[in-house]
Amino acid sequence: MERSFASWEKEAIRCIRCGACQNVCPVFKELQAESTVARGRVKLIRGIINKDLDITTGFINKMSLCLMCKACVTNCPSGVQVDKLVEAARKEIVEQKGLSPLKGMIFRFVLKNRRVFNTGMRTGRLFQGLLFRKGPSGQGMLPRMTLGIDKRRLLSPLASKPFKLLYPEIIKVPNAKMRVAFFTGCMINYIYTDTGTAVLNVLKQNGVEVVIPALQNCCGAPVRINGDYKTAQEMARANIDVLLKEEVDAVVVACGTCGLTLKEEYIELLAEDQIYAEKAKQLGSKVKDFTELVVALEGFQDKMGSLPFKVTYHDPCHLVRGLKVKDQPRQIIKSIPGVIFQEMNKPDTCCGSGGSFSLYHYELSTKINDNKVNDIVQTGAEVLVTGCSACRMQLIDGLNRQNLAVKVMHTAQLLEMAYEAVD
Ligand code: SF4
Ligand code: SF4
Image 1 (cartoon, rainbow, N blue to C red):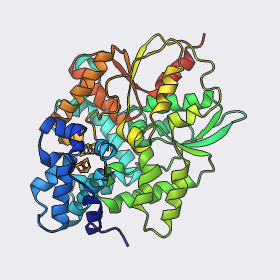
Image 2: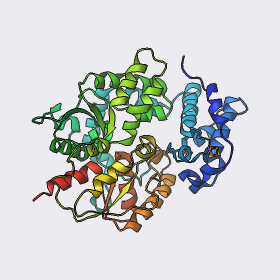
Image 3: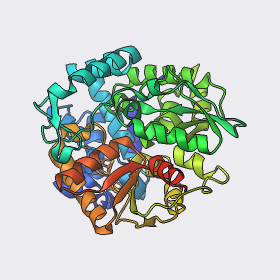
Image 4: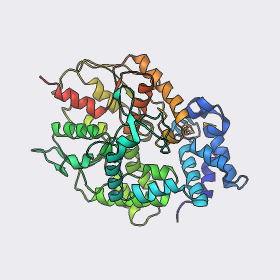
């Protein structure tokens, strides 16, 4: 039997109302409203569970104002799983009120169906010039009309060809040390193919054979986070089948959110599924972030050329607080000759992306992003490295709004550059 909304009361009553979450919540920092900090959200959710409150438009809006960044969870002396409570509330909202027609179409018709998604992206590529115009200084693109997205939101264009069509399904290397499956995620497949290419090149250089399963699909995180559990469960089962079919030592991801979803969220999502509960655990035990895998490879730091850059690093929320990957990207960056690594103030504070949060709450997301950009500027870095494509897009937008020429890239891309810089 699936976990009921009422059962979450046990989690909600663990909140001792100490207010420690106020110091770390990026949304509360900007809005200063009790209903937008963890303590206030938990109280509202208890009100709904106890039937003291109804699910109103105001409640739905307050639940949407959470970045799911887990900062409150990490800082909470009672360890209240606030993000899980918010997610349970969003699920209850979908069950009671249904999804908006737009979200329903995107989640249930597009994201769930690989073929429809591919066709949609192909069509989007053809028409992106009509719907978007070039961003200032030639970077990215801005919507010509609202399209449900704020017209000031700088987006990165769709790649001319999806990543999965650029490479064969198996990248063989002679005398391979190990064999891994690469779960690309949507943003690497359709937008940041340069990150995917860098992952392949780095793994090849280190003697790792890579399989890119053609039938993998979106991990389903946006669907689950928005409360559509039924669709998210179907997507999880499909990806589990595709990935467990491969005879590999590990499943590699280059995005914190995809990684956390495959490693931990599928296990929770399918805990009551008699067939898939065990399979989800099997998959979870194989999932590794790209940086975790690389630092464990003997000699990864050999044969690097020098890169004369000052570099700083932004910790994606789901990578640092979800998968607890903090040291590995820094170890990679610091191992590159010539690189000067400068830590920024609070590198693990959310950049304000929060998936669709940055689209629906652009103004607020921008203010949170501005704080992050200020911290980046203070370092004097020319290159900003991160481990998540959504953070990359958000940070490019923030830097661009302030006309800053800081180059943003994934850790894999910096490492690829170092390997290519060998004389
Ligand atoms: S830090 Fe935790 S216990 Fe304290 S008010 Fe926030 S959610 Fe409640
Ligand atoms: S998950 Fe992040 S945005 Fe949501 S309440 Fe906690 S600290 Fe605030």
